[in-house]
Image (cartoon, rainbow, N blue to C red):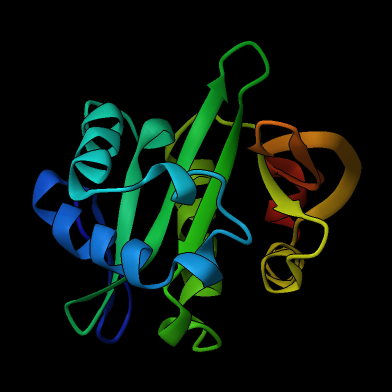
Length: 180
């Protein structure tokens, strides 16, 4: 499955052959990425990225799929669904972009396309995005995509052994999405 989201920009399910590019960005942009992504300090070598890809690559349905974002066939970032809860038909959407691809509209278009796909092609009823309180670009994406702030998840994400970060939780329901 390949999703064209705009001219020269597409989403494709992540695969092992993406590991080198993904790891290269993580490795060269550690200082920038580890502000927001708790997995970065634990991603020390390419094999760590391969292991991650293997763990998500077995997904056989959209609500478990992780995609790479490519601009003009170059790796730009990752976006994907996780933590699907069947009893509430709720799924979380997570994303990150390499620094040089920020502020180009790639992420908002990616989020909107995956939200549309999830609501039109699955039975999911709500999608959640969780952002660190200080991650203003990520918060702006959630708001621009029509998500509504619902709560603060205190100590929602562990950064180091004794360090936690509060997360802002944004939610979009299928009913609200239809009115956007």
